[in-house]
Image 1 (tube, rainbow, N blue to C red):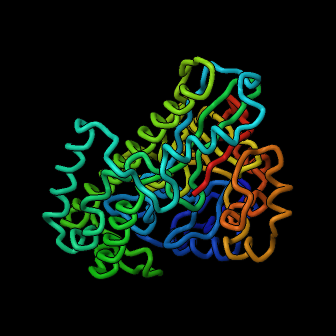
Image 2: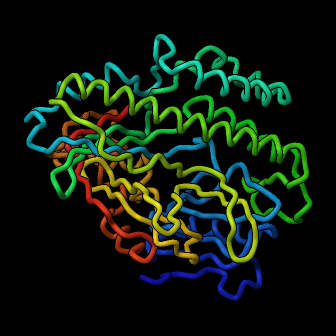
Length: 401
């Protein structure tokens, strides 16, 4: 399907914004128009079909920038993303009741604000991260002060889920194969890094590229110390998030090996970020690409697009669509705020919408009720020119913080 909506088509007041859906809020449109006015945005902004209003920048936006980066466009959940592996098990080999397995995973992988009592990752992973973090905090004492609560805990949070829309799932694909899928990011320390540099950008008010229509779009220009330091810090957060998902997957698989018949891992679909910065080449220029709520979808590249709990999810292969800046959506995308979902739905709604899924069915996850999200099938239809579906997954167990 071709692009459905183009904002700033004449490009008289900024670059065009190419939106792969008509299902977009007016507030999100205004956010995108503000973003498109920045002089350092290259060629056009691509907007995925799961688009919705975000803090700082629009969720679902892909922003190529030349010689500058906007910390708030990356956000505070630096490196948030997905990991999925396929097991050699078939659906019929799972127990009829998955409550015991859910409880066993929840006992092994801390969720919400919880953390491990002791460090679980190898020191060969931990030491390089610690040395790199020290280099960053040596230059930013304000960040060190913010991280004081995490000096002894960030290592214990590796291999933990967090809360909100982060999850661990068991899924079944169209071949009756069993998959493990999870969604998480850089935890509390990534949040602190993001908040620190967003605040610093607003404080510095760099003006190399002229007018900034929204304070949340404050940037660091290449050549400044803050630019280099932020790039170093955001890469650290992305690497931390990647290791967090790897460690969680290791812990989950260890539980399943104890609880299920013997199996092997037949494929790691991908371990992919969807809140991050990457250096890429688009439309004749080397640029910094910020994907906020979007994943990379270069030709042949595998990715994961999850639906809400109770809906379908997809393993996809990228088509390298240049209009989309070789990207696709990171999920279904919210159609309703968390507060509105809590006010609008009740426990009976939650139970009905998650029928057949072993998961929490209490007020604590009401904001994650499936109908608070866009229809994943509509989202997938809008990006048929961006990705090819490789596998369709259906959740049978979901863990949330």
